[in-house]
Amino acid sequence: MTPRLTLAAAFVLLLTPLSASGQNPLVESLRWLFDRTSENVMATAEMLDEQMYAYRPTDEVRSTGQILAHVAFSQYQFCAAAAGESNPNSENFEETRTTKATIVQALEAGFAYCAGVFDRTPDSGAARPVTFLGQNTTGGILAFNSAHNYEHYGNLVTYMRLNGIVPPSSM
Image (tube, rainbow, N blue to C red; front, side, top):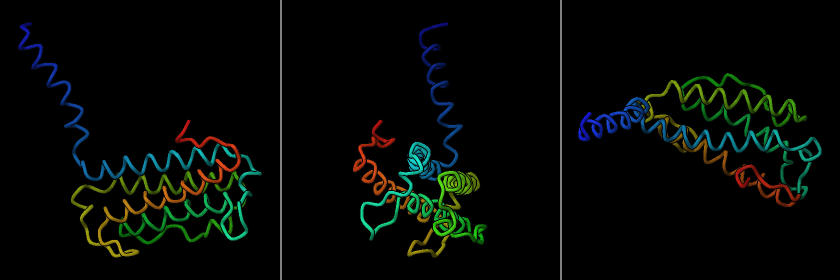
C-alpha cells in the first residue's frame, strides 16, 4: 500500500465514527451534558449512606435525600415537556421517597425516561416550540434540565464537602 493510500485509508477510518455518530450533533451535545449531570448525581446517590440522606446544613434547606428526590421528580417534568407529552409520573418523590433505596430507584427511572426523550429527539425536533418555565424550544428545555441537575449537584457537593466527602466529579 502506498503512503498516500495508507494516509487516505486512515483518514476515512478516523472520520467514519464521526459521521456515524454525528446525525444529530445538537441533540448529541445536549445529551453529552445530560449524561455528565446524571452520572454525577447518580454516583452521589449511590455512594452516600442513609445517614447522609438525612443531612441538612440548616433547617431552612432541603436534606440531601430531598434534593435527590427533587432531581428525580424534575426529570419527568422537564423531559415530558420537552417531548410534548403528558408527564407519566404523578408521584411527588420529595414527599413520598425517604429512603436511599427508593430515591435511587426514582433517580434511575427518571434519568432513563429523559434518556429515552433524547433518543427520540432529532436535531430538527430540538427547535420545536414548547413553552415551559420560560423555555421556548425542546432543546432549550433539555438544556435547562441539565442546568437544573447541576444546580442541585452543586448543593450536594457543598453538603459532601461539609462532611469531609470527596464528590464524584472530584475523584
